[in-house]
Image 1 (spheres, rainbow, N blue to C red):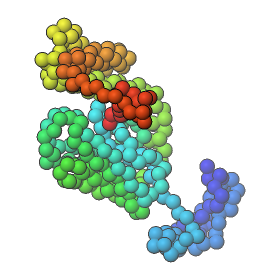
Image 2 (cartoon, rainbow, N blue to C red):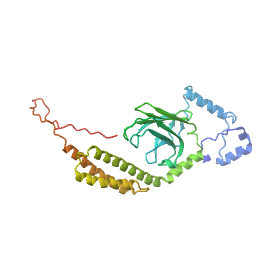
Image 3 (cartoon, rainbow, N blue to C red):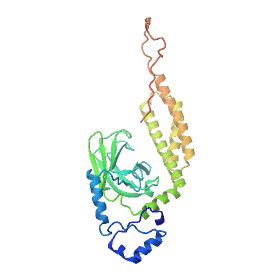
Length: 309
């Protein structure tokens, strides 16, 4: 509400008209407009102050511009992945690393999004570009750096770079931080009113992505370790893989059922690793007598606890 403002500053020559000033006073709950500045010069004065701040000449005034809405990219399954959150102070820069969704993928399409919804189709597309010329590699192996860089003028530069080849592509988007206030409020309210439904739909997408990744991993291990996997274990895995594939292909699968099927296949897949290691030749046995200065509390083998990326 206008009445909640600490000061009301009039901008533009027409605000000198008494009727306009009376209307502003009425809308402001009786608060008189601040007429300490010339309405013809106030915009130029503000621009001069901002220039001084950017140049470092003015240090006792802090003017903060922010991103009105979140910015991000589309990822696997149509998910909107945020890199820069709403109301982040600009200038700002953020980099995240992504990978490919298919084997021998020669290129990636970067879809730049603006908005607060969890799925890309419900947000605004600011631009799209392609990073091509990537060497063939298994899915998940390539590392693609995506950088969002917003300068003090609100101009957004999005860069995608393949770490292996050094190849990069960039798109420049102007006006990403100059949305109309009404549009911003509408998009924020839209996200809030659809939050529960969006969360359910994203849960389905996440479950499908996890299931697809596990199917890929299982098929790859069965192929690579085919001579070490017992026939009965292979016979148990193959129908589970086929069933999970079928469930993933459904337009709207049940997320909980998908998670349970994924968990069952994961448990079964662990038996493949156990079977492979059980057939590995044992290491040569050695005998030694510990010296009196040795550490008798040393464990039988080293344990490496690494979180996968």
